[in-house]
Image (tube, rainbow, N blue to C red; front, side, top):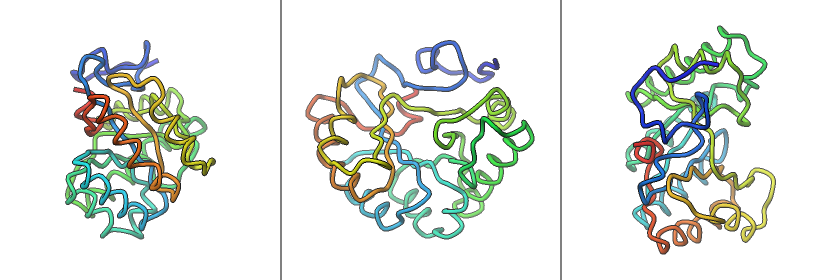
Length: 211
């Protein structure tokens, strides 16, 4: 196993390893996360909802999507949201060599920088699949590897009430809540945001929640 070589609160790190599954458990804040390989129109609607509720989120961007939707990518940043990398072609990083991991992550990160002028420091492995080579690659590239605390599984299920339940069950400080730009997610998002805000949580970016 590889470990962090940068300064970070130990409370933000998943048990014993490099991947991060939860943010700071001492702050009344959580992070909404959107993994993006589709749904540019839904992304724009999500941004409108976030603005309406004064909420922040982090969007993990697939490189091939960024190439096709540069204006939407720039709009995410202009809206005050955070951007991370979700790789370039949604590959299974657990099956990639060290050099392949580095290439897949770096291509996406460099592309995002070319389009936005913003360096990304967060990487979310597609499907949550990673191996030791992924950890070493992230470390070499100065990236934090982000997983999740709660998974809405909105890429598969369309029941809005179910998505809301998964996102808000057993709320906890530092939760990282995984979603995608799906129509059902757009429908569920206002209720998810309101539930956390009414419970006294602030919705921040992943970097802010990590502390």
